[in-house]
Image (tube, rainbow, N blue to C red; front, side, top):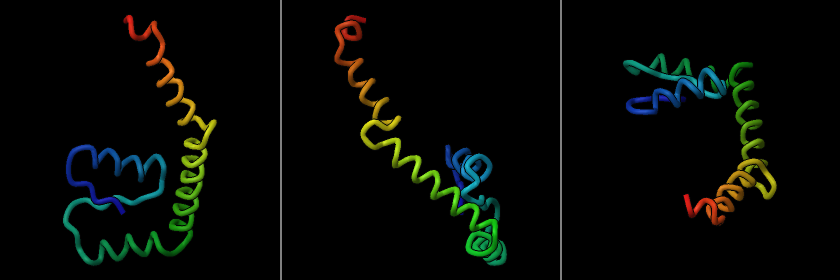
Length: 91
């Protein structure tokens, strides 16, 4: 459940809800019924199960990217190596 208040929280919440589809935004006045409805959507039914499955898939992709040889690990290694080169230091 995303409750954006300020700054980049609104963009992050929109991304979680609309792009990754692993969350639900709550904006405006919070009322017990609204919170209860969102919790029920997340905890039960097909929509919540789909969100949990997508979240697990994203977690697995993230874990793979930071392992040795993963995309994030390789990108960081490439960046560090570029900092070590003479060409970069002379620019």
